[in-house]
Image 1: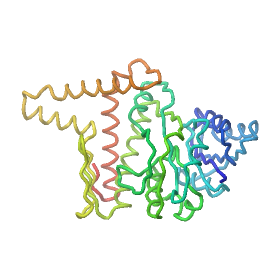
Image 2: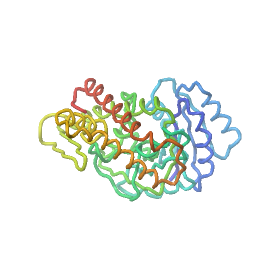
Image 3: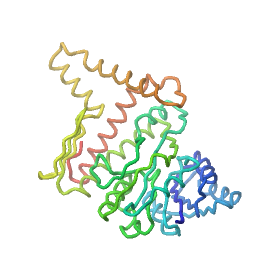
Image 4: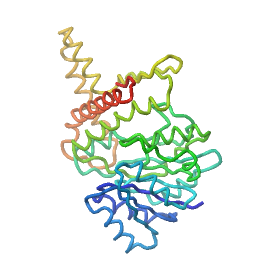
Length: 342
């Protein structure tokens, strides 16, 4: 089995070299690494070319894709790849030394793709520490996934390997998707092709999250914006309601509706309304903010990385901002794709 690694990069110079360093140290060396520069203005392409010149054993090639969008860049990379398997990661990820070995050894008949675990890299800012707690969290147990359900079955291209033959057969990434969701859409079409996706947590990458509040808000908005697209693209009928401790799903009723009533912003709104209607419940919003703080402290205490000063205090506000940005993205996406996604 030969393996091509494809990395789409746009202005990823701060972390790209560390990603390439880790690829050069793999216990199972890739047969080739293809970096696709997607219109970077920070010298990412030149950085990758310089790395290729001094690390010739990595067999690194740098391509350019002028059309803006990760779908274009990744399809360009796969089109130039020769491996039986194409492993995707991002410029802001640092693969573990045995990443490719773990990914490729998980393939077996009936498995069209293998997804690995995404762990947080050591955070450098308060925002990055918060994002490490609440973004792209993946589990510790391996499993086979056989269907896409909006809440389950989608895996990020930060750590995903796909049989190149299957990737080609299903048409690659949908180039009509410009911001987020193309990886989950690809997973859904792999299932439609009659294949499963294996989740292998031992195949790990360490991800550098957004370091600024505007970056976090923009990412959260884009996550929310892609949800109505996925709902419309893959479900003729679907009513999904997420509640704080459970979810309710029906696919035998007309309509495409996805309501996330468990997000932090909606909980605070509901509690504020209750406090407005019943003055003796004035303490509910403040109590919920205190709960978010205590919960964030508990999460931080479980992590092995150092916590920047102020991260615990900022966590409730950042969680509300992240949730509100995702809700805004869902609203805009709902109008664009004619669904009800809130």
